[in-house]
Length: 278
Image (cartoon, rainbow, N blue to C red; front, side):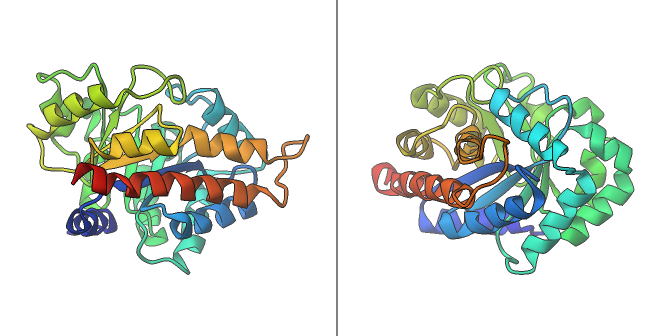
């Protein structure tokens, strides 16, 4: 079964360029503004959208994304409303791949079977669930694959060759390589180290490899895009959103544009990598 993610990466491969993958938190700073931001991302140059599921205990996230999740929760965001947001987005966009990224707890409470059915009908294409290791594939990964959703796994600098086959066993869509050890937004990615890591992972899989954590500027996005199949940016976009809010943390007239403009600049960086690599 071919998903929107598979189709998009096949298209980009033909074009000879890397993907630009954006991450934003669903419901940040409120549902209406969040939907407007997600709608603006493809127009600004995003090839794939990762949508964070707000959660009270986001252990892999740095301060910026933690704060975004708390803003969303405070505004009343839930997993059900996240799926509604996807459904609303799909009314005008049937092609941009959309991945939900988060933690298992909200899905477990929602009910795995119900969640997978609702995610599929809403228009979700894939899942990145950071706290479910391969040993727990029966919980969500295998049912998700059966439901026709990609299950995207994280590989890290500490994932050695012995561990990689287990990580990759039921992975589909793409592999998300975490360029730095630690939480999101903590340090800058080193393009040379990333190049070596991507080459090593490619010896184990034919899936596209996208690299995230530590990419904040168009230059950095371009450098990573020269070494990998995609650059993922989250914290920088979340910070642009936060810096546009008023003193009470509410959206202003600048909020959607602040995210869209940075997305466009980062997308130009990624797209400029084609000439450098080729």
